[in-house]
Image (cartoon, rainbow, N blue to C red; front, side, top):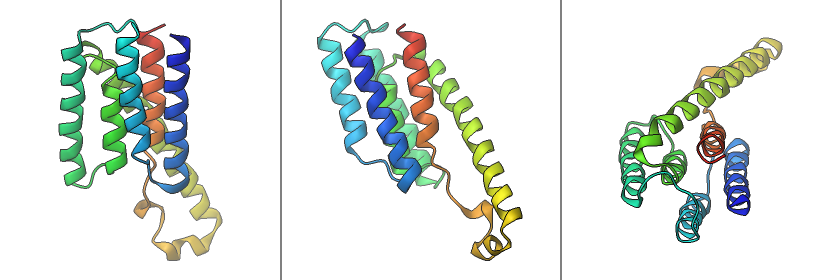
Length: 156
């Protein structure tokens, strides 16, 4: 069980690192999370909900995420990563994951905006690049942080 948790954390850490460096989350990371979840299910990992609940949570997360992607509010990698993390939690624990990712996201957004604002104030040449409001934010950091926190809370 500890090995499964360690691999889960490592996959999310790599996904967050990739998003922070390149604003992309390779498809392999969500795929590995889904495969690891399947292996964990059959290996006897102590999931707290029936399989259908996990699959339904995954489907709902993916569906809503695709809608958010359609409107340009989320990146495709973020949607796939969140849905893959959602597979690890049944519907009854979906609120915990959503809350953890949202709170982590708020911290990430505030830090990034603050750092960009400070950079803009210190470097007047940055204003010619369109300002800090036009840049993207690597939300994979929040998904990874919230996913790790939720896993450790739900499966101590």
